[in-house]
Image (cartoon, rainbow, N blue to C red; front, top):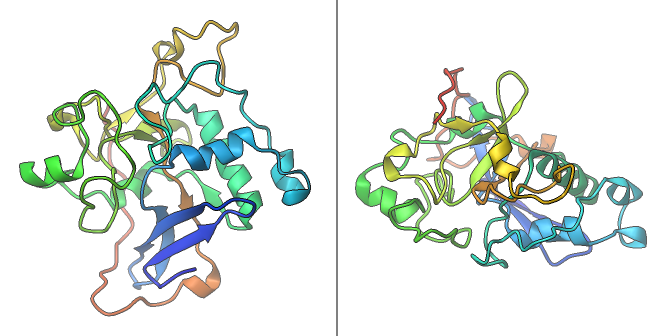
Length: 255
């Protein structure tokens, strides 16, 4: 269901919903639905641990599923309501494919440019706003926090610059981890920041070869998803809602 500014997409066969906010184009129409928060564990669990069988479309059951994690990938931080972490780019992509098949909507990972287009500068505003809106090394106490905790930014999003960093598609088509996390210092929270995966992110995985689904040493790696609008949803929004122009290409910065 949609009220023109937000969208809730139920996931058939579960009691879960995907909660999204509209990004507007220069005509004040919804150009994209973007996740209000990072993907929480219970939504990813529905993909990892279930088999659709007769309860869902055959396309959903046909999507390759991750192997079950051999350790608790939530690192003991918390599970229900907390952002999924230690997620590989392959798991993030397959999750979007499964969710699309389950719901009949087109879900995918966002591009870096799309995330930057809803990221204010400076990333968390004033120091007061930063501590209210961002979970970072200065206030997170070495742990992720529930999605939707703290205060939302001016657009209504939670956790864009902290808590868990998010898989996104770079301009060259490769996958990178965008934004900051609970491990980053406040001054490192930046809309421009991206990280490219290194072997260190899975160095302690005892499997040979290491799992392509989970990143044992990347507790900062999560995901946020986007959904393409239907034709009926691309309509003018209520007065007072300002459009967002597409973000121009900017030079990639790395830690």
